[in-house]
Amino acid sequence: MDYNSQIKHWDDINVGDVATFSKTLTQTDMVLWVGLTGDMNPVHIDTEYAKTTRFKDVIVPGLMVAGLISTVMTKSTFGNVYSGQTLKFLKPVYVGDTITAVATVIEKMEEKHRVKIKTECFNQRGELVITGEGQEYIM
Image 1 (cartoon, rainbow, N blue to C red):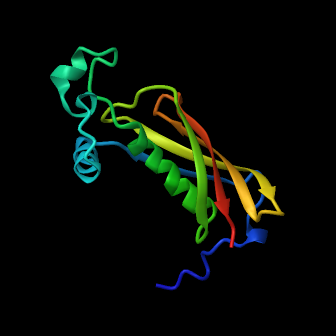
Image 2 (image 1 turned 180 degrees about the vertical axis):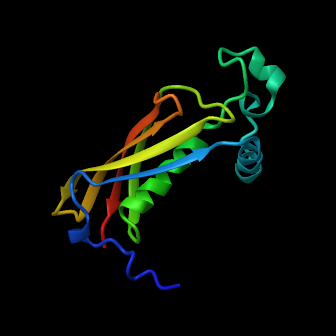
C-alpha cells in the first residue's frame, strides 16, 4: 500500500489541528484485551467481584481506553513516531460506553521537531474520562 499521500510532514501540522475517533467498547473487546495483555484484575473480568467495589460493575481497563488515544495521535501525525504520553484517569468506563478520543495540537517545538498534543477521551454523555498530553517526533 502506498502511504506517501497520507504522511504528515512538519509543514502539514498546525497548532489547533484536531483529530477524533469514536468506538463503543464491547465485552468482546474486553476479552481480547485481557487475553492479549494478561490483565486479570478482577474488577475488569469478574462481575460478582466488581459488584463489591465502588464501581458496582466491571470496568474497562484504563490503558485499553487510552489505546484510542494512540489512534487519534496517528491520525494527527500519520507516519511519525510517538515519543511520550501522560494520562490521568478521571472516571470509569463501562462495557457499552462509546468513547470519543480527541487529539488537539497545542505546540510545535521547532528545535526538537516535535509536537505536543492535548489528548482527551469523552464518554457518550460528554464526560471527560481521560486527559493527558502526548508528543510526537515529526520526521
